[in-house]
Amino acid sequence: MDEPKVGEEPSVMSQALSKQKTLSRYVEVETWKHRELTDLQPVMRGIESACRGIATLVRRAQCDEIAGLHGNDGDMNVQGEVQKVMDVLANNILAASMCAPGKMDYVASEEEEEPTYCSAVLQNAAFQGEYAGVFDPLDGSSNIEAGLPVGTIFGIYRRPQLNLSPERERDPLEAIMQPGSKLLASGYCLYGGQTILVLTLGQGVHGFTLNKPGGDFILTQPNMRIPARGQLYAINEGSSHLWEPKVTEYVRRLKLGEGEGNVPHRTAYVGAMVADVHRVLVEGGVYAYPGTVDAPNGKIRLLYEANPMSMLVEQAGGLSTTGRQRILDLKPTGIHQRVPIFIGSKEDIKDLQALLKD
Ligand code: AHM
Ligand code: MG
Image 1 (cartoon, rainbow, N blue to C red):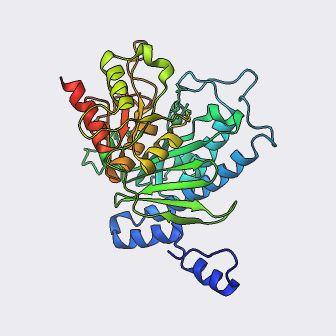
Image 2 (image 1 turned 135 degrees about the horizontal axis):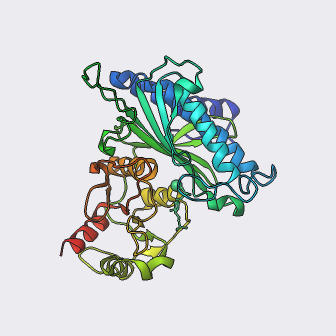
């Protein structure tokens, strides 16, 4: 893609701009090529608009005094975590934007105990859509008050076509209780120095950057591929005394670069999965949130965080595992289930799998 250069004639500049591929153009072309994805086009437009809106809110959070807690002392969400005003706002924006195009049946969010049915949002009791969405509306929201990066994570499933007898009721949650390998699309928006939307429709991973507030997402990182080995790891080392010994040993080997072809890894931890996984996707390495003695399944939610991120990273040539099982093969047992996760460069993750097998 030709980038306009500072000082170039305006005509050269506008020609270069006209060649830039936008997210909506990319989605349009992909959904023409893959007919089974056609109806995803309006859903993606909804997500794009939500990311744009949340980016604006994040930028203004301090000035508009919405960086703090929700409710008097902070309301709790279903995870037992204190909610921020921004968690609630981002949640409402995403639910409304995903339902508005009239294609989604329901959306399930990290912030809500039960899924939101789009029939209620659309005020049409008879409405049934063909897709279901999952999202973490504001990942890493504890970063908000300090003005540090946060993100949005999303995934989209098709509702399975089941031949049920009339008397057997459909399980309303059947779509999102499928393994992550059934995701049709997933992605994240990173609200940092720039707003970046990274997407997979199952045909590779592409990164788009918002060119100005309220503007277009421009394809800036086509065909993202994660290096086979990295040189960094992102993990909350404050919990290392609570890890299983083999995880401690794995991190020791990462640091020292022990093992065939390994190199010393430095540590870098933002504390927002979207930002940490984005850096791993670009530079290679490992993001991990292991289980601990007091929380054996760790903190990361399977439906809203682990599965969409695992689809993206696998599509970019990486791996994602609990340490013992591929994340995308897990059959969910609950909509707010948590899982330990190690995700990133193929060779780095294979070292962990080998260590845990011994
Ligand atoms: P959240 O979705 O409630 O913000 O929690 C998930 C976040 C991840 O983005 C991040 O990697 C992790 O929690 C950080 O947790 P900790 O402070 O325990 O390291
Ligand atoms: Mg999160």
